Length: 282
Length: 290
View 1: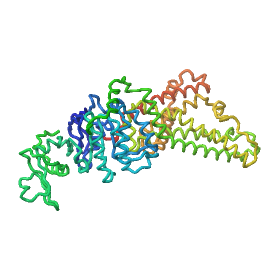
View 2 (view 1 turned 180 degrees about the vertical axis):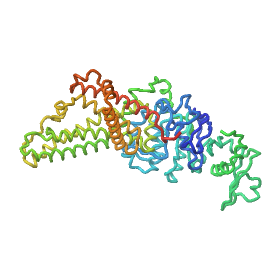
View 3 (view 1 turned 135 degrees about the horizontal axis):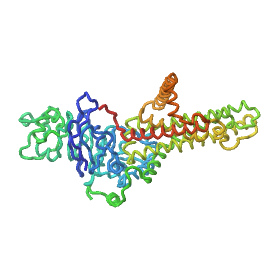
View 4 (view 1 turned 45 degrees about the vertical axis):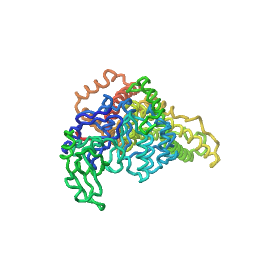
């Protein structure tokens, strides 16, 4: 379990802090969607979660050990898929042989299955593949390591449309009760039907930290509605097919969660989100 | 099995993880071996390219040098000119190799993958020092050896000279023994270059090699200014001389000089090595101003 306590951080002393007292617990068995505008600190938070950046105040621990020490026993429990990376000029097999030894739970059969799901081949030189393909190789490897914590920074960037749906399938099949996955993205549509919890970063704090079931029990999401249907809406946008809106959900009726609309609502009316989810500023 | 069930292989692996003995978080020989193996495999194409480039350049140099020795009685490698070029090339190559740490941690995308590998900072740091102390010198002298034989073969075939390659790496070590500085000085000097340029790589990730050279020059100038200032003040000078060389001054000879230099050098590389290690330990993805 990863625990973030009162995290404070800023890139420059004189500028506003990127994080201003953030606290968050990453529990096993869930896929977290870390959302926020560009430059809000999503990648920074992911880097801090795996000890690649150090908080100015507060601490981040994995199973009670501070991640900033980058102890091997901690690093073998975390896998990070960065937004941009280079793979070495070696074959897929060689890459797996040389890197899997660091991850005691690595499963080669799983890896091969993910490669098949992504329709990837065992290429001879990984460095010569496209960025989208590199991402798919690394995501497959990351899931097969079976690390308790898997962090992904904008994993769908560079992937084409079929790859994005393959990605959703692979994540679903690679998930289990021992793992937690944190996916940071600003392309919120890519995460639909995939995440259990949503965390929205805004203005140096965690505006929302709730599971999707809790969100849909508080809010009703409607699409293609007429003007009369959206009376009392908390948030609405006009589209070609009619109105899309978020309404209060007094009956608890379940509707499909529209992450993009929720995100826009949270950014536009942060105080309302905090009030609805009785979420004290984290 | 539903999609959230753990696979049997992963279950077995998880069970073995729970029962395996805990390895040291500072240094584990097994993990260090795995880390070295990973690096060698990832770099093998680049290392091969370096080997062939070095062999090619030195073959050409040795072949061209042959023109000054028309009878071809001594092999190119044994001539003083070539030996100076080889040793100069060696020091530059070693310094550049030590600076190559900056390539691994320079670009953000590379630094991320370097830091997240589950090996300790000590293992990563020692691996780098090991490559520059052992691997790169072996690669360099293997290339020289190839160049020695290829250049002599080419000379005998093209110029019709007698094939006389000499002994492998002929005269390279005696070059040092015949000079004022002994082989121990060579070893110490090499380690010093490696540690200094490695420290430089942890301080500056862009143009690390040139910046370290500039810093060394600057340091040299400061030392010279410091000492020449002292020379102007006789009392301070004699105190400084006493502190540095003590009562050895009267019976000062080349051997003492070499050992004093070796001693200073050893202290310097231990200090630089420690600072470099601490820099690596505190390395982040973004250097932030606090």
